[in-house]
Image 1 (cartoon, rainbow, N blue to C red):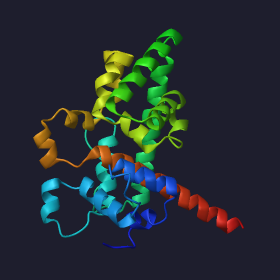
Image 2 (image 1 turned 90 degrees about the vertical axis):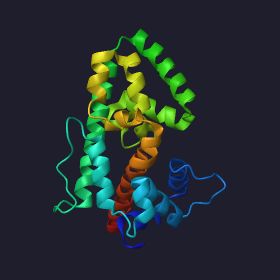
Image 3 (image 1 turned 180 degrees about the vertical axis):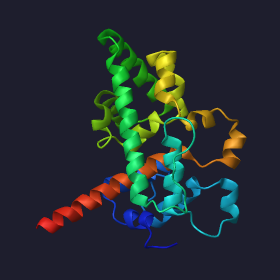
Image 4 (image 1 turned 90 degrees about the horizontal axis):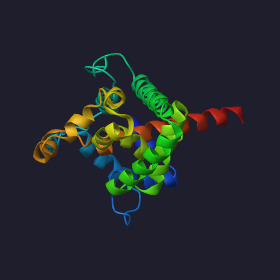
Length: 238
């Protein structure tokens, strides 16, 4: 493991709460103390093809993971224009991911605002119930609701788990009940995760990255990077 890569450098500089969130995203036991090396290895495993992981000798680079996540979050047909061999930096791809998150959140809020107030209350109640049934905790549910009513402005404050809800096959499956067929198709268009979610479990197990882990963890790594950058900027003014 290269300890100078972006992933590990950020994992070494997490807050206590960020460490807990990373463990939670990766489904690590509550009894396990946060360990950047353990989290790094789990992230690598989640981001890689499970069969290839058995034979892979080198770590997947952060740029490769970012491109994969950017492609999955990209709205519309096809992938993003990023390639591993191109001149785009990790920061460029992180910026694209963040912009796509904000664009999606803006579209979500726009469609939510079109609902009559009476329907909003009913849909909100049903949505919370469905999220609880799916096993999301109260923090993730509250954060997702904040994202729903705040749009792009809610992305910065949203918990990674809440953002991952929006990009899950679960959300794609319930969006019709909230917004109707045509609007749900508009909001969830390009969410390839939803199509992956309906594949047979065996195919998922042997052939695809674990996006339920990879996406929220990548989002959290971006948030950690933003925090560290802000802290460094503040130090310069002291």
